[in-house]
Amino acid sequence: MVYHQFNTSQLTREVAVNLTPKVGNSHCRAKENGAPIKVIVPDEVKKLAEDSLLPVFSPIHSRAVSDSDRVTDFLDLKKSLKRAGILAKYASLDSSTKLLEIGSGFGTNLAIWLREFGIDGYGVEPTSPGFDAGFVASRILFSANGLDPERIFETPGENLPFPDGTFDVVYSANVLEHTSDPKKVLSEAVRVLKPGGILHMEMPNFLSYFEGHYMVVMPPLLWRGMLGQVIKFIYRRDPSYAGTLRTEINPIWIRSTFHEINRRIPVKLLSTGGEIFRERLHEPFIFEASVVQAKIGTLVKAVQILNIGNWMGWTITGLQGHYPMYVTAQRL
Image 1 (cartoon, rainbow, N blue to C red):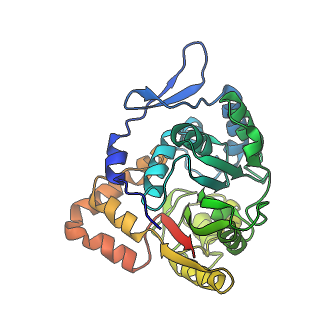
Image 2: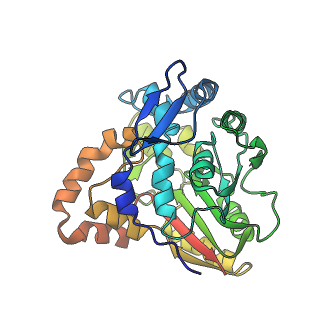
């Protein structure tokens, strides 16, 4: 397979994105180098996001994070460009690419990739607690942008309604930890890949120093209930949401899971994202979400000052503590 060559560092620096209200309407457009991205986020989608997300995240975030910041980050269109830059290290994004997004959420990521790169893209989004509005909102967003809402399927990642070998790329971002059976999701993702196809998923690493849902610094999680105990007794917050997260997900678990899948479906694990973490730690660090930057930006800058020769990056990845993970595998 020929990999698409793409300078992700250059992309990250060059994408200057501004979210500005459209005159006469509060639809949002993102701008890349002054050229508007061809996707709008209707007010109805924003309202659905607020109504479904805030009841979940307000109790678990500190008061320093405003409700508007939470929703803005979740619907931030510039994330799609950053994600495309990372994915392009392993696969092409163009009209020849048939792509599935597992957990397509409110549809912003898939809509931008359809519009900007011309991919043949599809999404699956279940109606699950806290994210029950995603499926409906994504179809509204697609219709508002002249895209076919039938590209979004209401189904969980554990039961993909596609034949074997359908897609060139299977993608997801911050989804696997919310599934009921993450091993089944990964197995299904590999199943629907064409031979030579690429699986690429962003997810938390629960052996890391940071927990991104509660946005707190914490030690690596060594057992399933540890997160809830830390949240309850150290941070004095509601631990109920912690019990819903699949905290077994880490680089060691990923390697073991792909070893199991490979016994049934030929697949090669290419990376858990350690090299991306080292690259980002060695260069000016770009945060995907502004609320995360506000929370740990100072800490990361301090680490970078001490990170002569990137020794910290190598040490952290050697200890399997890089965050987030970018899991990439190839169907053989």
